[in-house]
Image 1: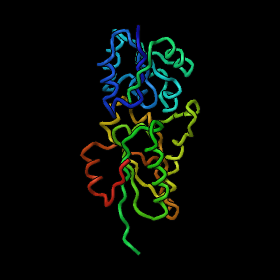
Image 2: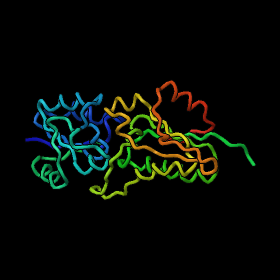
Image 3: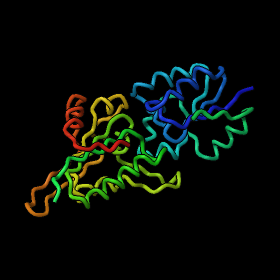
Image 4: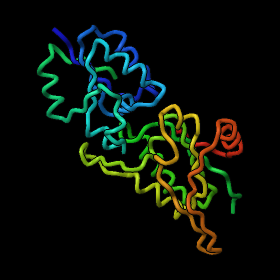
Length: 102
Length: 135
């Protein structure tokens, strides 16, 4: 039993991602989309927060939003998985519910 | 004829997730018509607006990054970028677009008006502005 948590705001702008990680159970799936994709970039002040979450959760990032912002796929944090819109649907289907963090 | 003022456009939000970045750019373009001294300062997530290689075709939005490159034609002489904001986001000047500027009358030209500044300098630039538009 697990939920899909979606986060759409930049972790540099709001604490939504941080709180989401705190308030989600082990085994949860986290999807970063829209401006939250910046949280999937390695070498930033929030990278450790995200890679730390990988210990007991799965973290995904929406590819089209990552690409839209000029970010190269090579910059994705090790262990964070890129998905497309079809993958987003699959994740929603595979989990019990979708919880949005705005 | 009123005196020329220093306009500063302060951009702090990432592009595409919200409309702020695009709206700010539109106001910059319009302000060129008023012949004032226009400068832009990118801080916090605003630095992401200048990252090169953007391609929003997958999210169904228009790519407006090329528009920043034309600002040299719109009376913009300075585009300042906050260094601390770049570093916190794992970015360097190599990740940013370059914007050319040329004075049509004197033919003085600058290869790149995008300039990285430290926080102290950014604060001075804001203080020296007559009007700051915050986005």
